[in-house]
Length: 269
Image 1 (cartoon, rainbow, N blue to C red):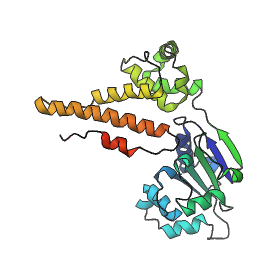
Image 2: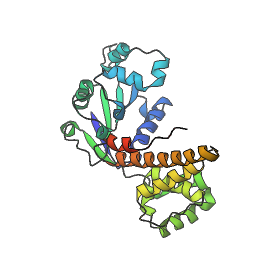
Image 3: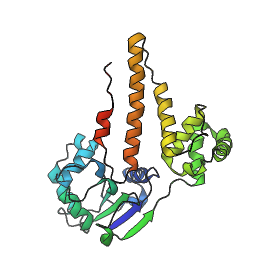
Image 4: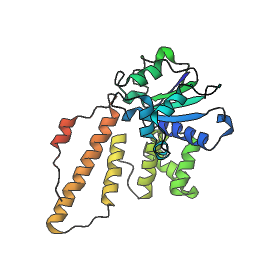
């Protein structure tokens, strides 16, 4: 069974899967029928390794318990005991994966074993035609509703400041940005630090740049004379790298233009 969860970047797809894992680990009654649950992040898959080896690599607890790849493979395929174990694999970031890179993952996405249920996340603009015929259900996640926005704002700013924050964000024309948890956090931090939210076009890249500048300005590094000049160059480099990384994440292909990275002037301090 394959369930598909679509959503724009930053709307909470990865967080939703992580929360589901956490609930299962805490013995949530509604998940008692699940024997094993794994979070598989496709953004880190770049080699044609066995699926069991990839899962062990991505989970520190399995490595700490010295779980062997072959043992995990036996469980995944339901070859032990009279009852096949019920396995849930949370496959995060299909839009960041290139079909054909890993044979095991390609097979899992198209022909999961009967005892394995998949939850696959992706950005909606990504082509999912490779697995579309195999999907049993689709869900589109749009981010926080107003109630959850208020809860998050309260955590950052205190309950008494929630109405003032909403009013200020509305005045700046940024209310739609609150649906994405990532952008909501950035706006809360900028507001808390008395940074202007208005001015400019209010794009995500512009708000991220304000956040990066704030972060760099609070870096607890002091330097004088020649070293101070190099620190200024380093701050500028960090800002440019941050913007470059953000632009790379915004592109559907998820491909970073390394020629632009080489153009950056590295600083020796």
